[in-house]
Image (cartoon, rainbow, N blue to C red; front, side):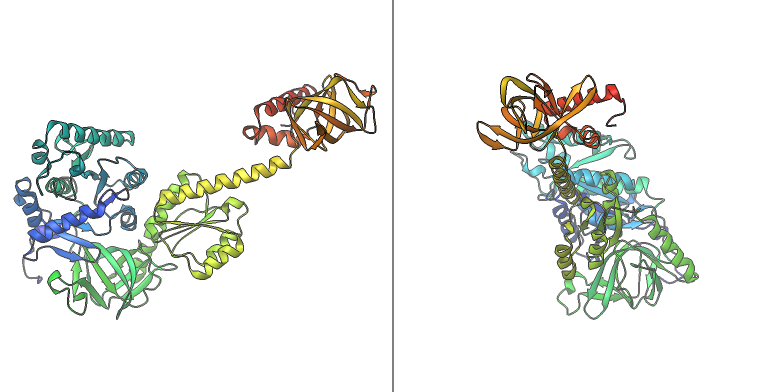
Length: 600
């Protein structure tokens, strides 16, 4: 459009950007494919456009799919831009200053499975970023007895079902509404929601039959038009602002960035500033690439060059020196501003995402800045400290950092959606560093927590092995087998564990008097290392003489060093048997009559 032509006011309203989230296998991709497929069929004239990483569905195509639910005259917004990669990954990557880049989200929940761990994780991310969303209750066609009506609005289809089928579906839908309520969201069927700012609309759909897709698009358009119109107002001619979705090597172009543009325009030869691993990158746009229309997909090149592109859109930018560009980082066109000013804007945006680190903690790596931030948030909730957080594959330097951790449980690297470089893998084995990788954040953290539990259990077992255990035992009457050097007597263990080589005390009031050391335990003639409560054994005690120092009927105790008593009471009380804990308490009571702070 030339500067002399009158611009239609609607052209300054950009397309709302839509992200699709949900648990694995709940139908995110199928739903996106269904929307895209329906849009391609309805928009055969070429109205539907495929972008890099996104699909634009214009208003007239939405109106065709939604039928009488959408009257194009009621809307100013040009349509919807769906991000093609569903899931947390794209959502957390796509960010603008101060939050998520997606203007609105669809949370897909399987009506049969209901809420799953990733559903909760998605909700947490939506809550943090304050992104409005609607719930697509997917797979209604799998309700036993469901009679499908292809691509129909859901209420029409619902009314045509038998009572039993409707009742089964209602039960599942109200369970989802209840789960949303548990997470702090007021929700209801979308047709009952008066105010979408205060309530979440639930739309029953089937990605297989297309039922409910008209409703879903209608609600998305209605929500965007009503609550986001002002936010969609952009200066089309202004310098472009966007986010890196992916960094890719492209044959013939070198390193390129896939960008979602959410404001202004980017043109060939524009100078841009891109967030980099170390410093912002200043470079010049060599080519702007879009996918070729479906009709031309057979041609040699998958892309076609365009001179410029305006928000909201997905575009591949080819430019020099993009090797250190980061997924999730900001992209800004300089145009007629001082380049330093734009560099500072990019720095400020990157510092918003900076993860706070501690002196000691785990190393985390993620594929994008957004997912790094989501990981850091999840670890903060799990009270796991972070020593280093970076975007990129796991490299040898990460292993070296993990190797310096003070605590065993922190000699760990958590990698989300990243590869492990070969030399790093070798170093992990050599340095005895633990590496966890996954493309699901909650699984990563679960695995790490299980590992920590194992480490702590092993440490406690080691401590328990090396710590003196409490015991109370009584010399049995008429069971003196030898009077001294060493004294050998029969005893009954009243509480705790009597171990070989333990020192033995006798309490005179609250004063412990050391009487000797156990030099052997026998049970029915066999040597044993320990005896537990209820056991009757013979013990050899080096030091005393029976009749002088100890007597038959005396109650003896294993002598506990004060430090051991403190560790047992404060750290290991859950790890010792109840009778041993009882012996510990009795021992402490005796000592504390003499010194109230003993063992504290």
